[in-house]
Image (cartoon, rainbow, N blue to C red; front, side, top):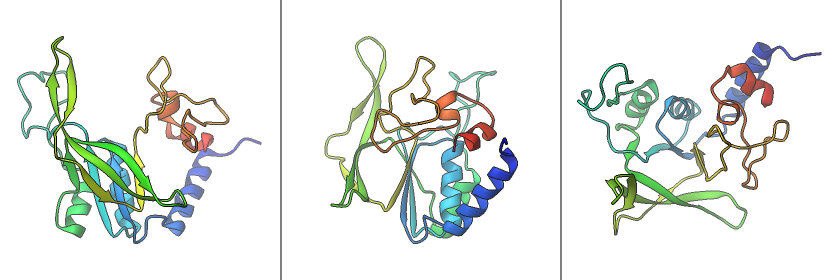
Length: 196
């Protein structure tokens, strides 16, 4: 018998609200999209003790730039609900721009204790291609009990989705699994639910 996707979603939401895996944790969210703001808001509602949101790109402009004409999506600074919730709870926007995560640090039990990061600047190389250059002396350690990341060096398929076999969902990195849009491409949330 086939599972009802909406019932499965309801079960997952109820279970996650009961579990509250981020309660009293120092949470670091890596990335700057819609999913990341969802992670920020959810972590706050689950009672995290702090939240940091790391973004590789530079701080976006307040107004649309000349090089960003219609019909392209306007690349401008936005404040979404997760950022508003973080500001209300912790007194500041959680985002930090132009930051590259170098390494996840763990204890003897392989539990995350923090991240080593470095500031970067985006510059054009001799061929005109943009490259991220590390800012010398800007290394930093951020304490974390829980990290939520978009990409951990996972191999990609020919469509730029994370590569993992259907059914197993394991990637080229031990202990990292992917499902839903990041594996199959943009689709419905019911596929992600079905994939677990």
